[in-house]
Length: 450
Image 1 (cartoon, rainbow, N blue to C red):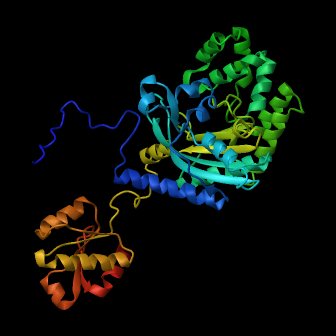
Image 2: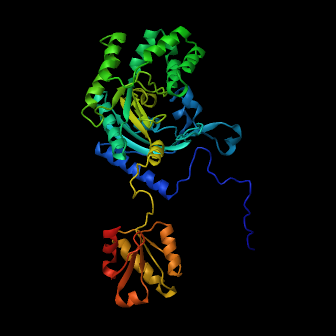
Image 3: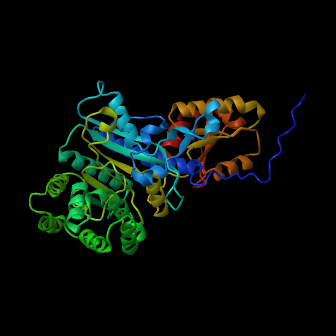
C-alpha cells in the first residue's frame, strides 16, 4: 500500500534554533579557511591535536565556571525510566578547558611531562543570542601543560598573534592582567577576602554595563559603596599606557616584591621575542569571569569592536580537581565565530575563499555521450581539478547558465565534432573566450588559467 505524502505544517518554522546557524557552502569555506590558519600556526608552535566528546558527565562541568557559568550549561535530562525525574546526568561541553583537564587526569601516565595541545571543536552555552554571540559555536583552544615558566604564556601569546596576523588583522592588542594583582588591589581597596570572588564577577562586567552599574552590583554583593568606589579607582587605567608605566604604578600600590606584578613583567619581557612584541597592554580591569584562573589572564582587543575575539590565562589548580594534585596549565581560546563575523564584515577574506568550489563543469551533449562526459570528468579529477558534471542532456545555453549561476569559471564541451577530432572545447565564463584543445591537454589548460 503506497504511503501518503507527508503534509508540511504551516506553523512549523524552518529556522534553526535561536543561537545556532546553518552553514551554506560559502560559510563553510570561510570557516575552513580560518581553521586551516589556526591549525597550521598551532602545529608550527609544537601543539598537538585533541578531540573530546560533545557532552560530559554533568559533575565534570558544574562548579568549574563560577556562578554565571553554571547558569549557562546546557543540561541533558536522564533518559528512559529516569526521564520523568527531570534530573540531568550529562551536559553539553561549555568550553574545551575543563574537558582537557579531565583528559590529563585520565591519561596522566600516557602523556608527556610537558604537553602542548590544540583543540578545535564546538561548545554550547545557554546564553542570550546576540550579534556575534551564539549558543553553539566553535572554539580554537591552545594549552600548555606541566610548566610554571612564564615562557609558556609568552609562547601562547606569540602563537595567538601569529594566527590573527595571518588572518589579516591589524592594530589589535592583547590585554593582560593577573589574578594575584587583582587580589592585591582588592585587598588594598578594603574588599574583604571572602567577597573577592563576588567582586571579580562584577568587575568582569565593567565593559558591558559600565562603572556605575558595577558599583551597584558590588553593593548588592555586600561590598560597601565607599570600598566599591575606591576599588574601581584602583582598576582604572589608560589602556594605551605603556606596560612599564603601569608596572611603576603597581609597584607603588602593591610593593616592589609583589609576585603577581613580577610574573607579569617576566611575561611581557619574554613576549617581546615573539609575534606579540609591542601588542601587550596591561589592563587592570580585566577579570575574566571563569573562576579557575590562578595567574595571568589574557584577552584580544580589536579596534572598533565591542567585546573580545578570545581570551585565556593560567589555571594551575583546575586539573587538581580531577587528579588530586595540582598540575601547572595555561591556555588561550580564540572565538572562531566572532573572527569570521568580523572578517566577513570587513572584507578580509581572499577572493578565492568564497564563490564556487568547482574549477570546471563538463556538459552532456546528448544521452549517448553521458558516459564519455563522466570519463572526461574523471580524467580532470585525477589531474587534481575540482569538476562537476551537468546531470542531464540539455540545451547548451541552459548548461552555461547553470554554470554561470554556480560561479564555475570553466565549461568543457565534447560534442560530436570534438570527439571525432580528439579535442575538448573549453569556455572561460569570466572572459567569454572559448578554445579547442586536445583532450590530453585539457586539464593543464584549465589549471593554468583558473
